[in-house]
Image (tube, rainbow, N blue to C red; front, top):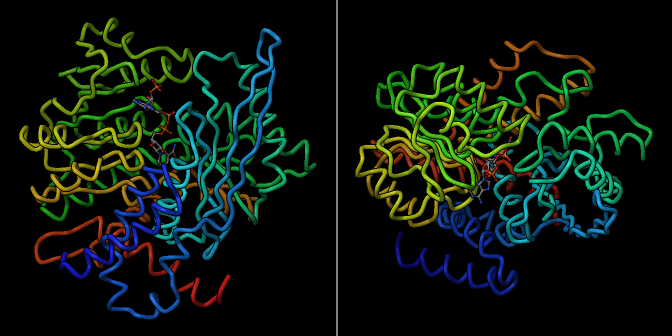
Amino acid sequence: MSNVYEQKVNDFMAKVIAKNPAEVEFHQAVHEVVETIIPFIEENPQYSEGKILDRIVEPERVIMFRVPWLDDKGEVQVNRGFRIEMNSAIGPYKGGLRFHPTVNLGILKFLAFEQVFKNSLTTLPMGGGKGGSDFDPKGKSDNEVMRFTQSFMSELFRHIGPNTDVPAGDIGVGGREIGFLFGQYKRLRNEFTGVLTGKGIAWGGSLIRPEATGYGTVYFAEEMLKTRGDSMKGKICTISGSGNVAQYACEKATEFGAKVVTLSDSSGFIYDPNGIDAEKLAFMMDLKNVRRGRIKEYADKYGVEFFPGKRPWGIKCDVAMPCATQNEVNEEEAKALIDNGCFVVSEGANMPSSPEAIAIYQGAKILYGLGKAANAGGVAVSGLEMSQNSMRFNWTREEVDEKLHQIMKDIHTTCVEYGKDGDYIDYVKGANIGGFVKVADSMLAQGLV
Ligand code: NDP
């Protein structure tokens, strides 16, 4: 980047940091975008005249609220709830809810900001939002989770709606939590609408929604590999996480002929050199989704190694898919991946690679599919769930999967269109500019709102 652009990026970031102090993840997400967008805006002055960058980093609305609830001992607990309504230029706010003790305003603003670009890339009419709470579902009974989610929705319901803001799941929010949230919304509004996505199939959900993020991440990896005349077949894959995204990334990668050798949770990772096949994955799904246990049980059952407190990036692989959380690959781990021959990173998680790790991938010119492109499959099928709810009609599994696959291909094409630099495809630039244009043009068309 030239010195002039670098100065502009630094000046812009200084303003963002001063206005949003201590929100380090938000600064990180904004920096990654403006680094690629500022040179583009210089060539397209309508965006700087309309002060689009200054407007796009400012949420349209931030809602913070108290969530009191009673635990099983009858004691009062208090958590904090949030909803960031970031941008509605191209559709209702759309984005997940995260329940995790690390949740704070800065983390949700980073996620909401990324969501704006990601949703635009899907080609579907969805604005960007994100929400959640510092509530920790781990170790809580089903009744405690229900009481908490009902209290959470008792405030959130007045801010959302099928044409206003449509939340979904994220870390700590899966089918069980969406069920309780939907039930409470319906009770308070006396309305059966598509106000949340990720619903159960019997009550308005879409087939393939649970699978969509993980499948999409693998479809995106396959598209990146195609640019080098290659495919997932025969590749060794490391995956982090063992939740919703990791499970279905593992399933689809295996279906595509790859061998997945790791999965993890916050206690460490398991390394299964023979590959996590369908039967072993079924065990993992039961462990994580039903029994809600720790990953070491997998190592005990199948006699493989468990690495407590470690992440899987030191294991030799061709393809790495971080599917757990933000900043889970640092500079040293990125170097270890490259040194071990990894040449594809497809991110199921949001912002899992630190800026230093991204610089390592880009320096080595590997195929690097950043989260906002590679994990957009989840929100894309959420968009399809909204369409099906509006039509009061359901598509088949095959129809939804085909649409998801096509959307991932289209996102890849957009990234190539805006990110091609000679032989190299800069997916970071491609996704950021590709996502930006539609939102920015819509903001300009709608005047100063
Ligand atoms: P889940 O709650 O289903 O699973 C999260 C997994 O990541 C668990 O294995 C969890 O381990 C692990 N994890 C979470 N936080 C940490 C941490 N701080 N350190 C180490 N491991 C951690 O969440 P999802 O699978 O839905 O989400 C995973 C990622 O994918 C997130 O970044 C999310 O934003 C992103 N994403 C999710 C989408 C979706 O459709 N669900 C859509 C697009 C992106 P443990 O159980 O021990 O905490």
